[in-house]
Image (cartoon, rainbow over all chains, first blue to last red; front, side):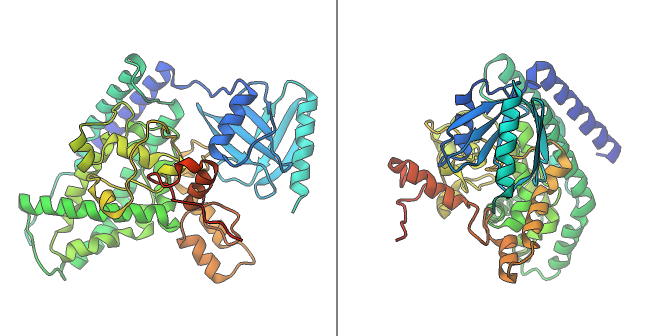
Length: 138
Length: 315
């Protein structure tokens, strides 16, 4: 097979499959929906840690979890799946709240941070406070 | 030396790959078969596959050239007969087993292999989520004994294509457990689902390419357990669909660890060559730690396939 034929075939194949996946519902986003779902998802990755409670974002596809040692955990919707992190000083690079929004910055090559919207200002500010405390530890 | 060329098996199979993915997608969407596809995840996997082809064309010449140089020192010459191809296939499958086992237990090689495991989905597109940096690890040296035994590098490349072809179709959830004799000898979708799972019992198991007998022989076989269905991905899932970041994230992380200030030279080397999860201060978990933790939380599971017998307690 010549190089141009190979390129054409690969390009056509990729475009066709991705388009059909999208058309058939493949672009649906992850949705936690409840605090319990967030805690269960966190437990899949950190079975030895039992979060005390979870605070869902407004969209319901991410949650911050209060951990027993005072730290915060994160369940973050990613595509139709999730990634989880413990937000301690080894990974956290910054956190800021403004109104009902929270921005976090992480020292993580594939997940450098995100913006979250909460149902109210209190949730955003209280999480930002806890994250700032984690940043100052160690 | 005869002037011989073999067809590129994987490149010629691209139409088959496309057709099989379309069939799997249709079965999942319209016949309620097990499995899932996500748009951006699929795009990433396919772009990783395309990048692998490009990297093979650009860089493969170096490893092939090195093996051709070794060829002059061969002890035997098996030629290009069907029997030579069959024996080469079997021995190369054993070579693949050890390459794959090293890839999961040495971070230097894991750095290139991890991207194949980075999807949280397990479907035929995941099979094509291949490395761009395989040559960097130097693992082609495992083929040198085969060349010295008299299998021509072109023949090895040809038979390895069939190995990859077998490995393609087993990346699916739509096929359950197969006929027992097949499950006994061959690497099947069920066995390979286990390999891609992050459940503690399944970590570091089922390294086979085509024949699962290698895992059974070398003690790394774990059967799929219907009560603990595989969860796919890596223990610290990625937060990007960017194929360049997927391809290089572990290299970045590994060198960042190895070049951090204030650690001994031995620790720097350990960050490169110890198993994934190793850390100089013990702050991270390796797969053996996760298995031990799982057994501590679920004592009734101790000693089951893939899990340690008992918890070692320190005073």
